[in-house]
Amino acid sequence: MRKLLAIFAALATFAAPGGRAEAADAHAVTKYIVLDEAATQLRADFNRAKGAVRLLFVVDPTCPGCLRGLDDMNKALLANTHDTRLQTFVVHVPVLTPAPKANDVPPAAELLHNANVHHYWNPSGAFGRALSEGVNLKSEGNPVYAWDVWLVYGPDTTWDGTNPPRPRLLMHQLRALQGNKEFPRLDSKAFAQQVRQLLTKLPETTFAR
Image (tube, rainbow, N blue to C red; front, side):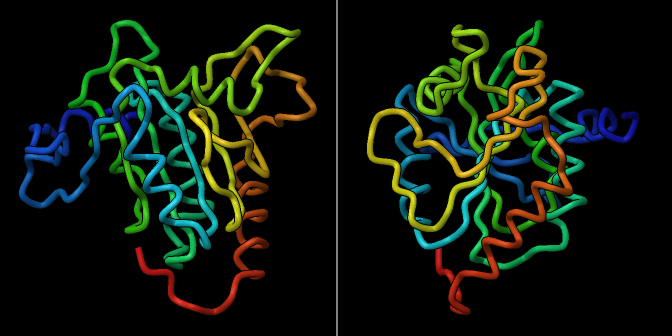
């Protein structure tokens, strides 16, 4: 965890024109897009990547559990998988108190070492509610806000409606969903295994994004 916290201290960000931001450090290349309430850019990017296996991570960029999850997914899958047929979308939402800020996003993003990862900042947190509705994320009949969740989408999925579509797999690190059989707790190795199995079924062509 000290390593994770050190990343926060090492990086700062500035906002760039068009809602895109990047790390101020000349050696850092992590960028993110600020999402509107309808997640318009994310939906467009997701659909443009149709034909690839797509991952969606929703995290609070200052949550220790979320950061550990990102680090685990990096080690189990992303750092060693540079196939362009795998595209990963990470939405950062403010959940904890004090609320995270935009400049918390790049340090968290630095935990994923893969050129095919795309980061987004949703300052209102509306995306967590939309995703919860889209995947019917509930506990004892009550809606559960979607954060600290990890989703896998197959190559044929299209995001047609307002809310994100249901995935092939959703894993989580949420206390409210403990014991839920439909949505298992995050196991980065099992998650990575399922992703690799999907990739073996795709044509051996380069996915251009």
